[in-house]
Length: 423
Image 1 (cartoon, one colour):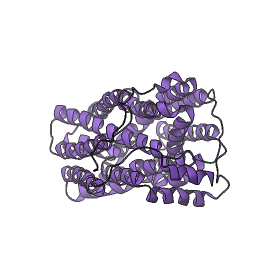
Image 2 (cartoon, rainbow, N blue to C red; image 1 turned 180 degrees about the vertical axis):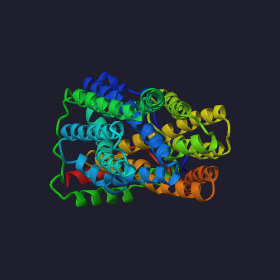
Image 3 (cartoon, helix red, strand yellow; image 1 turned 30 degrees about the vertical axis):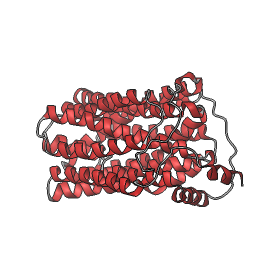
């Protein structure tokens, strides 16, 4: 049986709503409060760099420094999520994130801001995200049962895209009305609100087998399992191409806005909001669709690459907004499906470590894609840079098809992994 063959199973059931569980509802609410502020900061940060230096490479450096800690340390962050109490770790990450936003806002409004300040604070935010990403994925599986997991992961991704929809639009309005510093102060308040909500959630600490081994050993165990599990390998190969070459929106959208469309701050925010609107529409659909399939992952990844190529050829604000809306839908269908699939195949004792691998590939590899995009944009053109990214995403989906064309992939836990947990 091949990659696209359908296993003979009972008719799929409608997904159980994760919002039926009070602890998850509060967790969901904390993210709904926090994510718009995060995206407001990301948008304001990119605009600030281009306003100060007007350089694609300066923007690429900020992106690189922000995501380099995720590239280097997120796998160990996943190991940490498998061995310590997750609630205080989550709260601590929000506090540090809020402090860096506060410091950046103060530097701007007092007139002391220099680009190196942003570089340093971007590194701090990167360390926060290296821990926060795998933690949030692992916590979802702690708060809901197996039958609500797909819905829980989709709702978790929904909060990201609510933020992406609201945050950039607010950033454009705030920057135009009150200056760029105000965006960072508002993000500080959203972090504080998130901390207050998280404090009301009860998350039982699970004592896991192997929790006393070193972080490096625990990380190596997770990587070893990923190499032995074909479904995990398939997920990670497909994700690598989209993560490295496609999920660089914080670099690509400012470049498209500034160099292809010559957009104002408000229109720059509109491009981001179009991306978020498409993502939101796709996520609302995903919350009703149940468990992910191989077909869904591959089609979404291929569409993502083709749409980026189309964006590189557009000089119309209206067309670009429409394309970004559709690419946002494709991106979120892909990323949410691979995240859910990985949680479904993960043995409980490896959940944080395997989640960290998707975070590593989608978020942590952004420095590689950002530097490549910045280099091509500076030396050739922005249009060529975006088109190359799209072509490489499509190539990755072709490799995934070739890799699994003779195999049937089921997104179910590997019994051998559960046995390993008991050893």
